[in-house]
Length: 234
Image 1 (cartoon, rainbow, N blue to C red):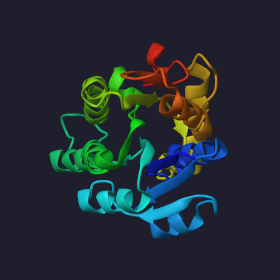
Image 2: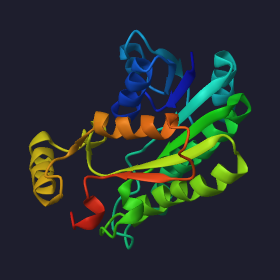
Image 3: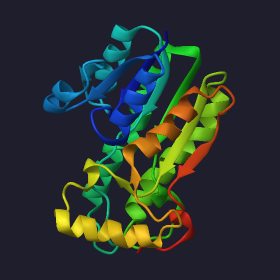
């Protein structure tokens, strides 16, 4: 039986990924900072309270697991969006700390426990690949994450390293927006997207699991964006 570690696995894409990996027979460990969310995760998942940006904490989690076959990093943050002329740079630095540095720190901390035939899957976002006004900060963060994939796939081989780039996904990331405004925005985006729908967390999780478990995938960033990169959602 394989061991999977999903960092940022208490909600959204991370939780959906953890459920799918468990359904495939893996023992799945999820890491989150929020105790209430950890307490609420499925009984079949093993929860660990830790911050992905804390190297010692993540190393301790990996130590308790033993060998990690699949590491999935789905850390995100709510900061970093806005026009570059007025974007607060301290806010952008915090956003890099939360997502980019969280990804790097987690990989470095867990690496000594990764199986030689294991995998690392990083989750970025389509902002790295589109020209949407007001997203330069987010694009820089997600672009930095995607830039890790190819060199690490070579450096860490035969460990496989891939990325997944979601587009618009209906997850708790949008919880700060009033419900009526969110529904109106989603409806507008769905009408513009080639697939004519907004993705669910499980849609993206299916792709994350593919990247994590397919033995012939490495050095690849898979776009699962409903065609967002092909149209304007601005």
